[in-house]
Amino acid sequence: MKLKTFLTAICAAALLMTGCGGSDVADKPGSNFSGDAVKLGTITRLNSDEIKFGEILDKLDVKTKHQPKFYDNLKTMQLAVESGEIDQISTYRSVANYLTAANNKFEIVPNDALNKISDYFCFAVRKDDTALKAELDKAIDDMKADGTLDKMIDEYITKAKHDNLPRVDIPKIDGAPVIKVGVTGDLPPLDLVLSDNSPAGFNTAMLAEISKRTGKNIELVEIDSGARATALTSKIIDVVFWVIVPVGKDMPADIDKPEGLELSTPYFKDDLAHVKLKK
Image (tube, rainbow, N blue to C red):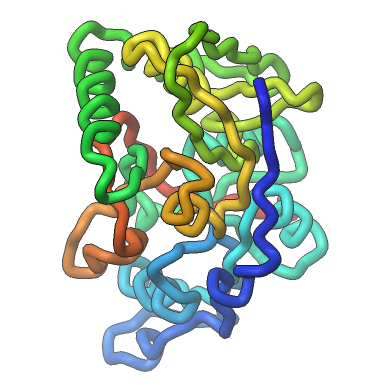
């Protein structure tokens, strides 16, 4: 499996959003907020800055004021919470379960308000790549219909062990067209690259199955999360993993969908969860 690293230094200024998170929700009548703001690390949201994202979290959880800080990978966030740079990591429930099982320093923060936020995992392609989107949609729909998707979720997420995540062999088809897929390799058990450079995780298993069903080769290209949209629109990659944020009164429809992208049929849903150091 050939892995390449997409260097993002030249576009960092355009992609990384800065500022201090927060909102005026704590000053509104009826707010239950008290105490210091929670410094919260989260993966970069490409269509939202840190202030806007903090305001959304404050509306969903009126007892807590949030000060988000965007990061491009999970490893950096783990170092930040261990050093005290941030108080908590905002991630997905499956990832939070993996982190707390792998490192007994961490625990999941009890917070019923986070159950209001669920992201739907999908693939993003360029808007004009309609044939590829149709292929992905059909493969996902067929996997749902024949039970393959449920079995994969059970194997690679529900029953996944942090110390025994199997490598995934993506088939090689002689002479077949190649689909280049951007991966972060840093979101276990969803998508990761093992220490020997072998791909693993649920998302990679999804790609292996899609390769079989479409008759096309998959080439993984390792990228930072913040470079996803740029790598796709510049045609360095053809597909990237994405999430659909459900629309509601507190969730703008465009919070994380840059222009020029189309999203496939969703194939997995996961709730948000926050992780912190044990006291």
